[in-house]
Image (cartoon, rainbow, N blue to C red; front, side, top):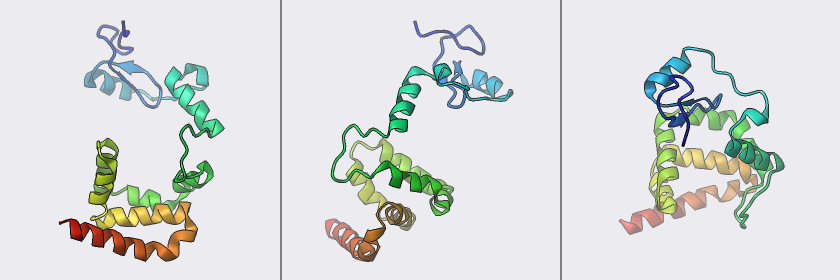
Length: 154
């Protein structure tokens, strides 16, 4: 049994608040929950087990399947600190593109399609500039190659 909604205590729970991990069953219960201050749990024990395990791996910076293209965690943290990246992510069109790529079955093809959007190219350039600063001088050549390849496929 999955358990009861922690708001109405009648229906089966289906969803979980990302902030405080409270389980709820519907939009109505979610809205009721939002009427009160939502406070994250103070201890990792109160967090959901899968969240605690994921946080533990993140804290230890364990990379399960590293490849030659794996970016070190220290460099990835630069993305979260970049005001430029944060400002670009305010754009709903860019967020939609990133969601489509994330949900795509063929991620490489989704990235190729997104690379036709100047906004996505700007975002990708900024991310690469942060995680691989030594690549800056070849950036223009890379864009030219990508756009040439895309045009030849049409």
